[in-house]
Length: 392
Ligand code: LMR
Image 1: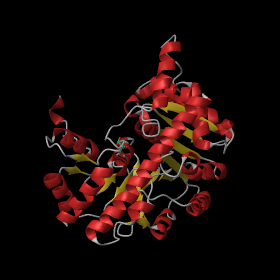
Image 2: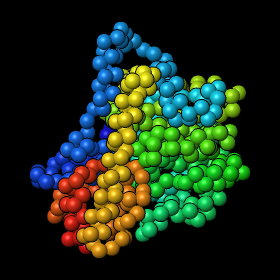
Image 3: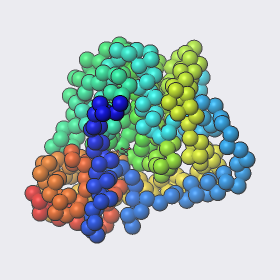
Image 4: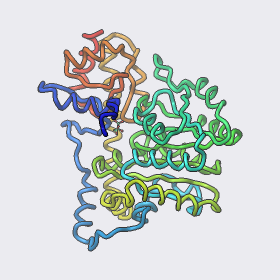
């Protein structure tokens, strides 16, 4: 029966991970998949995570099933981390999911249940898995302009012109912070203007929050989400703990809705039902690590300090790379790298140059020029800048 199966289109990020792993060269540099790396190139388990895990192993006395929504302690701490009290808890329904990816998928499924003909507006540059997840849920996707490629700044006029066409019941997918892949976030005034536009149109924002704490800081990174949540009747949220807790392979995420209080229970029941139909109970361990950390003042303090050190390192890598490129190329063309935030920036390089960087220098970045700024260190910043200069 399977002779009819089509060959799936390869995922660019996963294909690059595999190509990098298969490359035997010693000095190869991985700037592809979005994982944080320390100065020695490791992706360590955070100390606060180790301590929380030790505590869980010591004290946990059952691994029996919980509810379809997962551990309520995890959902409560994540509500506080994301929303900071911006809306009453009576408006919030949430379920745990295996990572932020499944959260995006579950929210798309929820949209389809409510409104199968909904249009999802997605920024023209976005995480490469957004479109497949939206398509897998059978939803229609339209793009809005986002980045001015050469200046590396927000295409504000394009964004507002395109989103001005979003109608009632449309959904607008926004990156909460650390826009992936551009590193360009909305400013406070942009969020306010957007809130007014969505409110007038009756369109629903869908915030993908995968990097809270890695842009400007934990609260600042959630500012846009909190602003929308306080102003609009309905918000959809997908959140991930992969990067800010370093829990990548443990798959820790949640799908959340904010609605008028009268609709909260039906949202919760639908989210739970969607979990039941795909994986039933969400994984527990990683979420328990998160709630153990956030509910313990000392562990939370340590985690925040570690996260802040990671954030600062990425900011430093950005400044260093912008400086190294200026020195190597004699132009300020890449100055925007220092001003952007989060793990990624898009380098406006031709595809042939990106190929040569890989083939001749063992430097792996995505085909659209996306570079993981958290994958650089003191040595590789200089290597990358020189290799870019040599391949121009
Ligand atoms: C990325 O964008 O590289 C990460 O979010 C990893 C992934 O799942 O794609």
